[in-house]
Image 1 (spheres, rainbow, N blue to C red):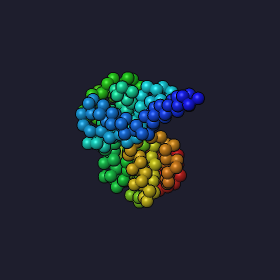
Image 2 (tube, rainbow, N blue to C red):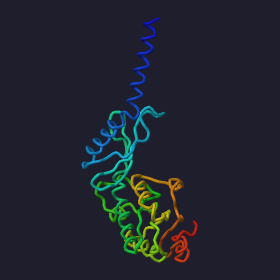
Image 3 (tube, rainbow, N blue to C red):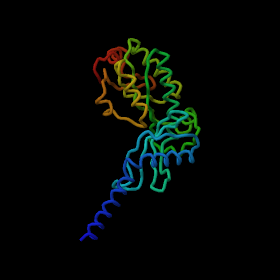
Image 4 (spheres, helix red, strand yellow):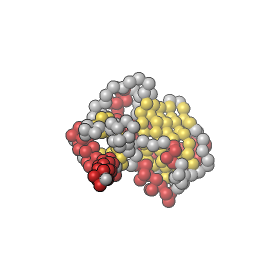
Length: 246
């Protein structure tokens, strides 16, 4: 009887140990493996911000992470196999898109608007593999994206006018070789802007649902393409000052 009980206890302890390795107790080790794998692949230093799917899920074949490139603050996603191999990541595409984000943020700042953007490129045709170090200009010339779209978080301010937003987007549109530019815009109260942007900046991707539990003044879609800006400046004036959503 005692032998059977001891065997059962031993099995339980083994199971608990395995579960511990698959859980939070092993997060630091897993993060370090991902960081090492990315450094070996790209050079530089990387920091895992959050771990998602772990080994032991239905697929049981990868662990997913949100990662930041320390030197550039670029945040992206990566998947690693149980053997420590980086299976897939979007670091290179994020290095290209970060150039667009900086351009747009800078153009907005020049118009008196404080904002943070997260942009993505969309193409109907397969673009092929993008090389590390590719400039935004070369990317557009070679791969001809159909449009860029993403999210824009704007800090509440009396400087936020339809003319200012339109000017910033129009200038960016011209600088990206007239590729259509779209954004889901969220206007955030001044007192909570920093907190929202801090969380926003730690994500490789986001959706409108992420903003549902955040304090916001308004949200709307804005786009600039050849001979077309929507909505117009008068409507934007209302939306930027908290006048509902479209």
